[in-house]
Picture 1 (cartoon, rainbow, N blue to C red):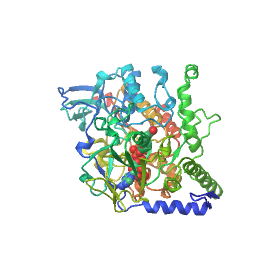
Picture 2: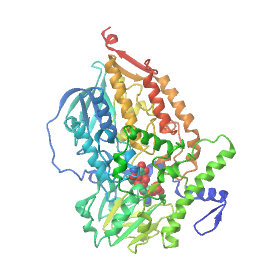
Picture 3: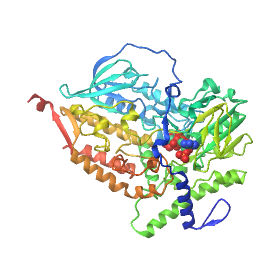
Picture 4: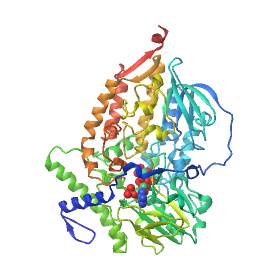
Length: 597
Ligand code: NDP
């Protein structure tokens, strides 16, 4: 028995029904089509001066990397460790940092502990100031990484790749950009980001709004005043609306609540918000850490959040508490399935109880409670979000799962009530499961002139999500058939290490062409299906989200575009075993001598 929001005890059966009811309310026939792209104006980079120009670059390099976030930077760093520095990084932003370049909204921070999130702390000697670093600190750290490993001279910023084609004769990728560069490279690394393409809800009338509006990843401090570290003084006297209650909104709401006259939070599905418990770094502890500590801690954290239960839970925070048992896995017996379901209910029940403990108004508290399984969406951790709803200027506008009905020239409309606002903030997230070429913004053309969109028209074909048949010397870092994990930077570090090692192996062994074989890709797909079986059942019962492509029916295409849903450490094991095998199993290669013949 567990207790519901009115203090009534609910049986597991009743709770199961409640979850199903909440899921049904939110399952829409338009599925993924409910979203729309940002207009050019909303997508504009607010952090660079307009008018930047430079001469086109025409060059031949060993490697071109698309993306200057952690994945691209770490790939370049690992390549440099192998002595490969003839590398060009193309990045649409004005600096390194990826997600930490774009997300500068007030309150932005990383909810994964900084000591396991920020890569290469031992190499750089950097000590995060707090247990959970602010976005500003991580952005500055990205710049430090770039300086430390001399990446700046290799970057082309404010530059979009517009096209890339494999030239079979030259055995090179020919890459073009929005600044008329012509780059020719032996290896082409796609590290374009995981949460990189912002999206808007397709609410009727959204383009009619006459006030100021922006997406959280394009925060306009010129309008709000302040900065990521200073109060937004221009919001005094303003009415602000925020659409969304995901991980981003949870961080933004308390900051806006402090200054705006009125804040309306438009909610479709309540987020789950556990205890944060931010702490300054204990300098003595940090300085006493022995060599090799960071990798050990990173692995320990990933074990703890994937149900692998290390003897000692080194991080021991909200994440490890919530994820200690993997309740989405396939159970061996009905009794185990029941036990996993009970654990999941109890974890979420503790989160729901916290809402009652913190939020004064019982009606508001009831609306803020999430009724979905703990793996269905990303759980958040924050100590100021729920208390913000006790402020008289903060109003929760719950849409009972429907979403905002319309947007008028004056503001959002729900249940026939118009909420006039001066500023409308879209905390509406990013594309995650849309086609990779769409998210990249260009369509790589592989062997025989076949584009990625054509080759993958019925779903992806890869080995480990990294090599792809038909696309020689192209190396992918993405979620498509790749790994997944709570600590994205762990995933990106391991992927970057793998990609760099493949390039190094090719160069060392005179391999001019490498691509995966279709048979090996099929075997990899079987692995993905095998490990995804338990998760697929779990996600069918989940409320819609980007984790399950908004509950859109799984067609044969979606059944190929999976991630490895088992433990990230198991995924890393596949990569390591492949690297350790000198026969390079499952790939087609051509060597210098082959070409000479
Ligand atoms: P999300 O996709 O998680 O949230 C989008 C929000 O918009 C949801 O609450 C969604 O509701 C809501 N929404 C969509 N359409 C409507 C509508 N018509 N009316 C009202 N609300 C609507 O985006 P986020 O930016 O919050 O987070 C994306 C990801 O970014 C996270 O999952 C996480 O991986 C990452 N992140 C990580 C952080 C960290 O600390 N490491 C911090 C912030 C983000 P619904 O839930 O019903 O779909």
